[in-house]
Length: 191
Image 1 (cartoon, rainbow, N blue to C red):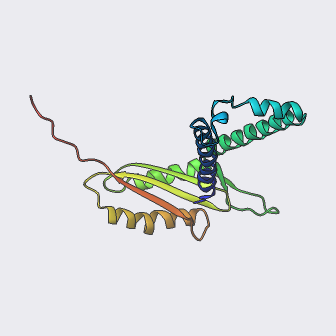
Image 2: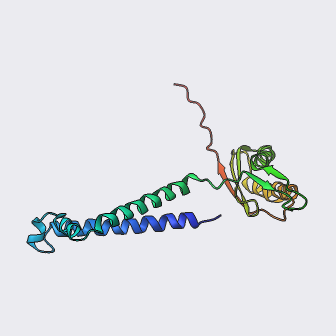
Image 3: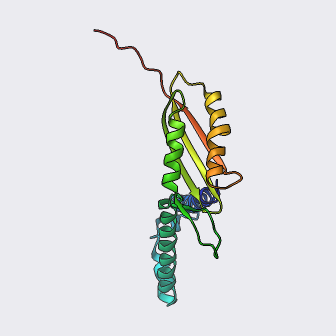
């Protein structure tokens, strides 16, 4: 699984937090008189107003920085909107012979149907992410108390995934399997 977006997200939020904490700490220190009593009682924007009046490039630079911040924010939001889900897989990526494309949802549906028939399995969600050449399979499986998780994992690893790889004509496909036990149903009490 590609951890790059999560790493970039954490790093960006950490840097933003450091900048905001430093600005807030500086403002608090100024207000408490750490830089002298005259500065503590002076308007915060007084010096900035004087500086901007003396330098004509100041406001265009502020506007450019604001545009850059907006574009970075939009890029960050778009990164979170994209799920990374794969729409389809190219089975024969040969330019001369043509390309056979299979919908990823069809592949996931067939795998969900197969694993859903295993004893004790209540719900299966399968999804392919990545690219056609470097795809990864994610399986989320909810099973009941009557299922054996070790046997369920073995069947997925030894039967379902190899059958999928054979159908897709691939040697292997990286797979993440999440097994989740369902809570035991409590007997109804009569009042």
